[in-house]
Length: 150
Image 1 (cartoon, rainbow, N blue to C red):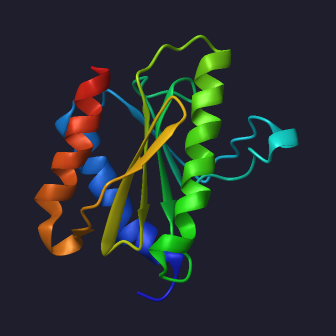
Image 2 (cartoon, rainbow, N blue to C red; image 1 turned 120 degrees about the vertical axis):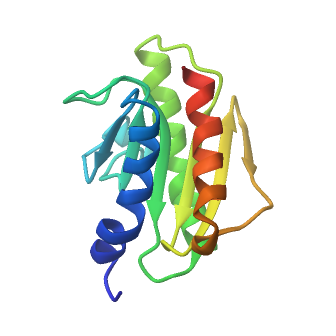
Image 3 (cartoon, rainbow, N blue to C red; image 1 turned 180 degrees about the vertical axis):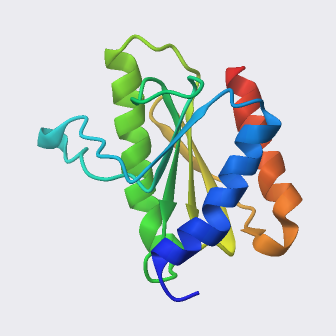
């Protein structure tokens, strides 16, 4: 696969959709949506994927998970962008009075996956690296996150 869009459509989306189906569509998936929370703080722009704790909906209501897709294949360089989207989700939830314990995130090449957790002001980057040849492990991490909200 040569483009980010191709990776998104053939690898990332099917994994997220599988997780949603296994959970009877208890959350919404937004892809490519504008998520402008606070322009003055630089918390604006298009999100690659954002999962909302609200079942199928047409607007972002309770963002709980942000996924950032690498454009050049370098995971580490995208971690700050993912963290910024997570901060935006946290701020959005605070403003909307959505009480959630943490916001989660992921940076992926499609083949390599790294997960993050933002709890208050603490950003935790999982030491484990997950690979596409172990899709059940990736789905397991996603399931743990979904279980926190349902």
